[in-house]
Image (cartoon, rainbow, N blue to C red; front, side, top):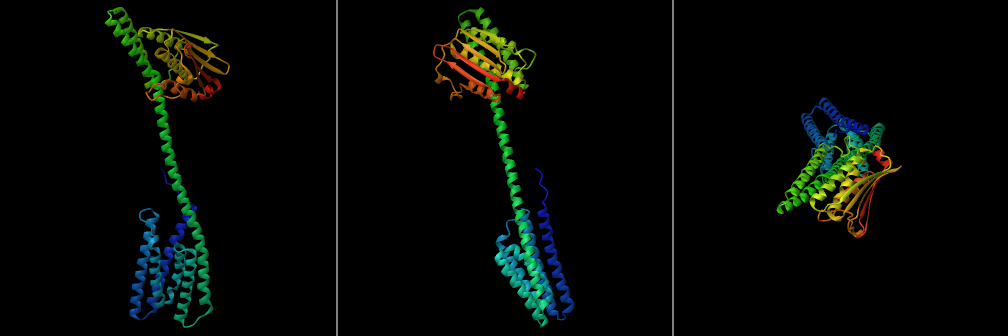
Length: 416
């Protein structure tokens, strides 16, 4: 992720900080040069050079530590910042005692106090520094004139005003950095959540597709193979051969489904019509059920004039038919099943009816059972829900079962 450009407030703060540090160094150098020019005593010169060097070193160490912390490469400097400032002020006071030209360093020191200390303590400290400058001027000149009082006082007032403006900009910069950090964190969390949701949705889709295609086909193959084995055990080679042929046909259909699935093709793709696919499904189901030894008749009918449907709608109808017929073959003990496709003015419907043993409403699973069964109906409800469709099951013991699917055409068209 690219780092956002520095804001105008941050640029102003950077310029002010650089100006403060450069100003401190320049004023310290000016004071030292004036001492060396005007001072004739060697001891005082050496003392001024030594103290100026110590002050410059201490000041530079503090600014480097503060910059490393601001860049995130060092811990906070707050615990010892006050002691650092006290050392800088102490060295400055000694230099101020040596020569009055070091009075100009009070101006950057005003800003340091306003930045490091709280507002109340900073105002007290600025007042004391102003008094020290006035006293130093009086001490070195031997007299106290009005400009010696007004100059430091006006400088202190101006520094306080500028310091408050700096504090406001600094607080804004801190808030902006926090907001950017929160934004980055939120973006990362959102991206992770979207990735997790996408993975879960894809996993659900794959589970639904595998159940509706490969799992049901393999289940039919298992049932028919058991029937073929029973026929061979009974010496009925003709029946066994017929059932082996059914196994081959079912495996071929399942292989085609698997290839479409791997290629991420819709089951409704191709040139064959939806009605043709459903008729073929009816014939295949009837053949597999007969070969498995619990055959039932499966018929297909269509009501209304066929219209072109979006691929995902056709796929959902085929999956519904597959799921309904698979449940009939596995549980209903029916003798007859009817697949009815209807085209209405505002919706397309599919009804799967059987005359089997039926079931009570409490036996209809609303979600997958703990043993892994019941996933087909739950997955079908999810698939239809994505298209705005509904799934209703009507059944009663001994009266068969009707699985009714309805998909609105306006929702289907909007999703195509």
